[in-house]
Length: 518
Image (cartoon, rainbow, N blue to C red; front, side):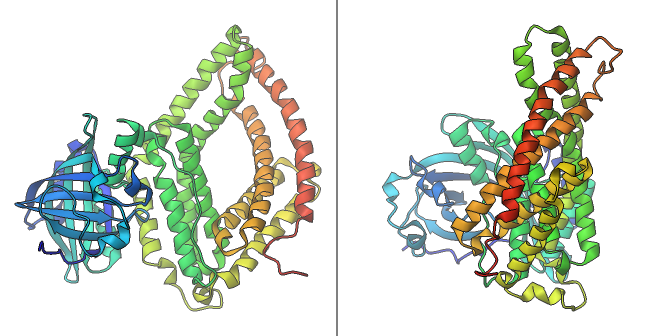
C-alpha cells in the first residue's frame, strides 16, 4: 500500500509578486544572510473534469513529482490575502491522481477518477530557505520563477516569493514581508497558481489579468462574537480590493470602480464598529484608505465622464468641437490612470495591505484598555447588529428631511450616509430574514443610484472646467461643454423629482431589524 503523507492541516502564508528583474535583488536582502538555499524544479499537473467539477467546489487537485515519488495534493480555496487553506496530501504510484486515499472521499464524494484530465501544468524553479527572525519563529521563504501552461500552448509567467509560517506568531511573518517590501517593490498576490491556471484554461492568456470581482455575501451567524464578525467583514473587503487591483492596473474601468467600492466598504465597516476600535487605529486605517481612494478617484471620475459624454458624441458625430473635447477627455483619463498606477505599484500601497492583514489576523483592536465599548467585541454580533443599523438609519433619516432645500454639501452627506447604511446591511444581512433584507436593500440601492446620478452630473461641471478651451471666450471647445450641461440639466431635474418620492418611501419604511410592534 502507498504510504500517506501526514496531514498538512492549514497553511498560513503570504504570497508576494515581483518583477523578474528584481528577484536577485530580493535574494540578496540581509534578512537571508547566513541561510542555506535549496533549489529544485517543480512540475505540477492540475486535474479536473471537462466541465470543471472540482473548480465549482473551490478545490484544486494536483500531482507533483518530488524526486522519484509523486505527491498528490487537494487544496481548498483561499481566504483573503494571507491564506489559510485546508490541504490534503498523499503519495501516489504515478503521475495520475488516485482518489481512493482516505480523507479524499469526504471532499470529492462520488467523483469518478476516470473522468479527470490534465487542465494545466505549472513549471517552477523554486529556491527555498528557512529564516529565523527570532528564536521563537521559523519562516520558510520560497522564491518561485517559471510559468503556467495549458495543453494548447498558452502560458503566463510566474515570479513570486512566498512566506510560510512554520513556527511562531503571524505578526512576525507580516513584519518580514513589510521589511522585504521596503527594499524591493512587492505586490500582495491573492491568486493561487491553481486560480491563475484555471483563468488561463478558461479565458485565454490575458483573461486573469482583467477579471473583476464583485463584493458578494459574508457568512455570519447571530451567535458569532462581534470581533469575529468584524474580522470576517474586513477580510472580505480586503479580498474584494485585492481581487480587482490587477484589472485596475490594466486600465479596466470596472476594476477601478470595484476597488473604490471595496475601499468605501472598508471605511463603512470602521464606522459601523467605531465604538469598539481604538481611535488611533481607526484614524490610521481611515487616513491610508483615503489615500488609495484619492489615487483612484481621478481615474474613476474621467471614466464616468466618458460614459456620460459618449451618447452626446454619438449624436454629434460630425461636430469638430465635440471631437476635440473627446481627445481632451482621453488625455485627462490617461494621465489619471498613470497616476493611479504609480500609487498601486508603490511600496506604500503594499505596506497598507500588509498592515491591514496584520491588524485583522492578529486582532489588533484588542490592544486597548477594557471599557464598556471594548467588551462588546466579545458579545454576539446578533445582539449588537440592531443598534448598529439603527444608528446609521436614524442619521440617514435626519439628513433626508426637506431634501429639495438641502445645500449640495448636505446632499453629499446624505448620499454617503445612505451608502454606509446599505453597506452595513450588506455585511450583516445573513443574520436577518432574507426576504425583508432584499426588499430594503432594493429600495436603498435605487435611492443610492439616483443620488449617485446627481453627484455625477455635478462632477461633470467640475471636470469640464479642467478641460482646455472650456472657457466661454475660447472657441475651440466652448460649445461642447454647453451641449453637455444642457443635455444633463434635464437629467438633474428629473432625478431630483424621483429622489423626493423615494426618500418619502424610505422615511415610511419600517426597518427589518426592529421587533414587531416597535
